[in-house]
Amino acid sequence: MLPAAHRLRRRDEFSAAFRGARAGTRRLVVHFSPAGEPVDGADASTAPAHPLRVGFVVSKAVGGSVVRHRVQRRLRHLAAAALPGLPPGGLLVVRALPAAADATSAELGSDLDRGLRRLGLGTPRPAAQRPGTS
Image (cartoon, rainbow, N blue to C red; front, side, top):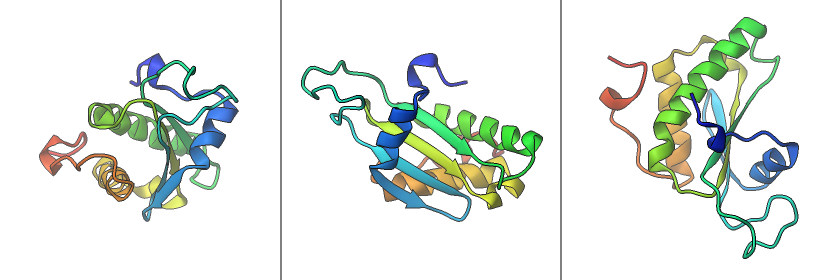
């Protein structure tokens, strides 16, 4: 579970993350806006520092509610495990594509690592350290 301080909740935070860099894979698109960019019109020098915050977008194109919630739970678990290696202060949004509906946790973890690596956000974890792999 993601701690409350690490969750994106407001529309303007999601919009700010979408305006940043993005990297896509077969099952996911990862959007990232670095620290220092004001979210709600505040000056970056006076804005309070915050930890990296993560949000998820899983549309109806992925599947019915059961499938969407399963995909989101898996992504939330994978993102929580990746938090220690990510830079503080940024906004990260993980958007699931329809192919994510049939993916295993290991495949989603691999795609998340690949997207983060393409954005220059840390090094990938070995497969043995990824949640959902044996």
